[in-house]
Structure formats: structure tokens, C-alpha cells
Length: 106
Image (cartoon, rainbow, N blue to C red; front, top):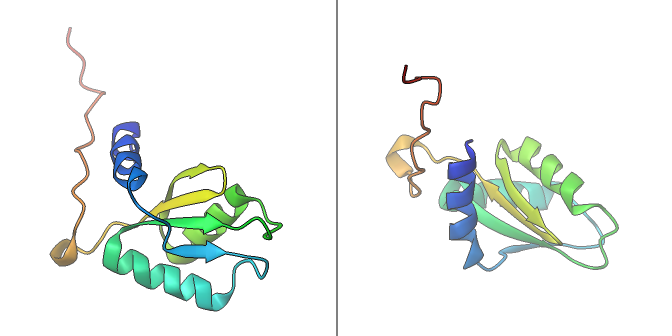
């Protein structure tokens, strides 16, 4: 994911409310399954890590991303934003195209 694409997703996520909360029981298999299902439907989700969760939000973001085959867009404080590209027929979010920087003008 390019920085331009990440910035675009961050902009979309700014107005979103978290749809999941990670509490003192941390990451359960049920929560992971629910996050994976939400990513399939929405592509971009926000997760809130509650104060009673002793785990580091950055580590939680990486673990959830690995388990759901998603990408971490950002972690700010106790908020995690994840993105998983949808299947071609169900794609909701169109990312900006990656620019080709290797082509130089001489």
C-alpha cells in the first residue's frame, strides 16, 4: 500500500465510529471471526481498545491484521483502523492508483 492510498483510507476512517471494542479478554477467536466478517462486508473498519485491555494497541493491530489477512492503516492511541480489499465484484472502496516512480525523465 502506498502512502497516498494509506492517506486516502485514513481520511475515510476519520468520520467512522469504531464497530468493535477489545476489552480485558483481549483477542478472542469469536472477535477475530467477527472482525474478518466485517472486513469482508465493509473493507475498512475501526476498532477501539478499551482502557481495561492490558495489551499494546500496535501489537493487537498486527495480530488482528495477520489473522484476518488485512492491512493496518493506522493506530492512533487506542484506535485501530484496518483495511482489506474486497473481491472485484463486491469492491466498495476504490483506492487511488499507485504512481510509477521508477519512470524517470532524462
